[in-house]
Image (spheres, helix red, strand yellow):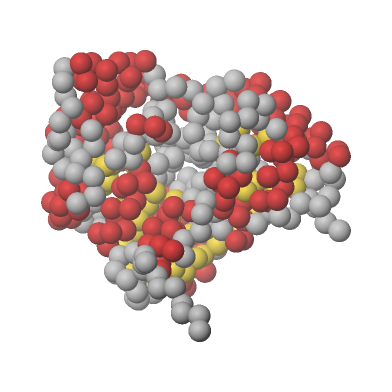
Length: 399
């Protein structure tokens, strides 16, 4: 008789899918001939002034624990930074975290019980939906839909999905991978609906400064903070990773109602205790120099976008539209419906590393994500040449 092997871990964890991005990247990592655009980070190093701040802190021996909620000077710097963009955001509403993904997980741990209903707008970076599943939530996805390559939200469908039984809405805008960005009017409509149902909004706004439209006065994408009250059921997640070129530093922050903050400090204690002091000191300097760092980063990324998108649009069979925000071109190639297989072949046969759409949602099957955050813009053109040459040899995978 065969005895079933007992589960040695929580089933929710065992059921998690491995990252499809990593699945493709693992096939090509370490190969110097591969042009890698699969991960969501720039290949430009953190600015000198930020790195030196961390070095100086370590040289002073600042290698000990800090307050669970973060160094007072960093929380104040974040408060000043956020208040300049969105109106008053007090220190009492802030917690410093060990990266944006840590902030997202803390929010999930704080607000989701097993069996809770969670609605997510997809396609989206898989960590956001996976975290809800880790907590045992019942996940309901509302999909964006592509219209001529531009992904759009069906507001009526989203509001119909959010009911009084919905504990949380997860939304990422500007969106990874599609570049879709909510308007301020849409955010106000969503927030009003969630107030009526008692639903928490978890807003991942880490790409808010990577916004390329001209319809904003404060140099960033619309934020739920622009339309919310301080005590709304709203948690906003931010990170130093993208607009300060600090992906490897693992430093982020949470904005939340003030009543949550002391409890979030307890939760941080039982997760990471605190972010490292020298990393936080680097964050202070990054915020103090944001006027020098971030506009240059955004201007360069816009140049990257405006270089890559027309080149891809000129490739026969490619469907995409320019992203309003973020750092990705998200596109589809006629005749190649399996993006995982296509991405693996592009690595092996063309030396081109892209992320498959299946990593972000089933409805994104067949799409590919290209991170255009490249210090050398010529790499983008070289990558398109490799794609076009490969497509000439492989015009269709459909039999």
